[in-house]
Image 1 (tube, rainbow, N blue to C red):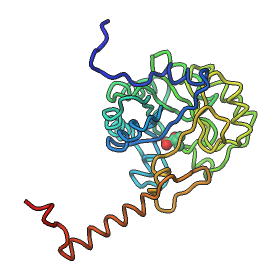
Image 2 (cartoon, rainbow, N blue to C red):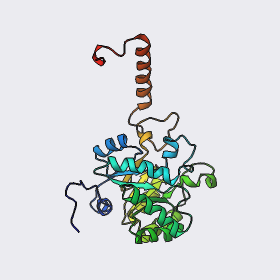
Image 3 (tube, rainbow, N blue to C red):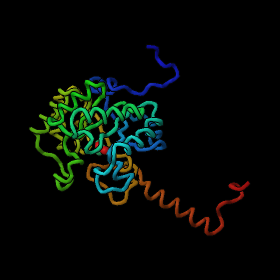
Image 4 (tube, rainbow, N blue to C red):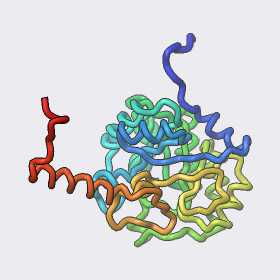
Length: 268
Ligand code: KIV
C-alpha cells in the first residue's frame, strides 16, 4: 500500500508505548473541541484523551454516566480534526462496553471509523480482560483504566482512593496480558502505583497516583482553572481562566453599555 504523502502522522500507539522503555515521561491531557485540542497538540502533549469527563465539564452533568456514544463521537471528530501530533484516545462511555463482546467491538469500531482518533479507553481490570482481548484482536488499541472508576459512582457512593493493592496489581497484570497498550491509574496510593509501574511493560498514566507513573493525565478544564468549585486534591490549576474570562466578559459588558466599544478601530 502506498503511504499518503501530505498527511502529517500523529504519534502511533507503538511509539506511545515505547516511550516507557525509552525512559521518557508521557504527558496527557483531555480535550473536547477543536480550539483547545489544537492548543494542547501544539504545546507538544503526547496523548490527548477525549474523556467522558466531558459529561461534567462540558455538558454540566453531576457525573460521567449520561454522555452517549454519539456525543463522544461528535466531540472526538472535532478533536481528531485538530490534532496533528498527539495520539488521540476516546473514552468508551457507560455502558457501551458492558453489553457483550460483539456490541463492544461494534461500538469501539464506530469511534475509529467515524473520527480520526486511534484508540479507545475503557474502565475496568481483570473483569474486562475478555473484552480488551476482543478489541485488540479486531485491531482496536485499548488504554485500560484501573483504580477509581468514575463510571461506578453509584456503586462506590463517592469518588475515593482505591487502596486495594493486591486487586490493583492483579487488574494491572490482567489488562496488560489482555493486550492493553497503556493503563490509566486514577486515585491510587503513590507507592502502589509505583509498584504497578515497575511490574508492567506498558506505560502507566497517573491521575492522583503519584510521581512514580510513566506519565500523567489531567482534565484540561481543571488545569486551566475553568470550573467553579471543582478542585479535587490531585489537581493542580496552572491558570485561573475562570477569573480571566469573567473579567473579560464584564469589561466587554461595561464598554458596550458606556459606548466605549466599538471604537474607531473596530468600525468601518
Ligand atoms: O474521562 C476522563 O477525563 C478520564 C481522566 C480523568 C483520566 O478518564
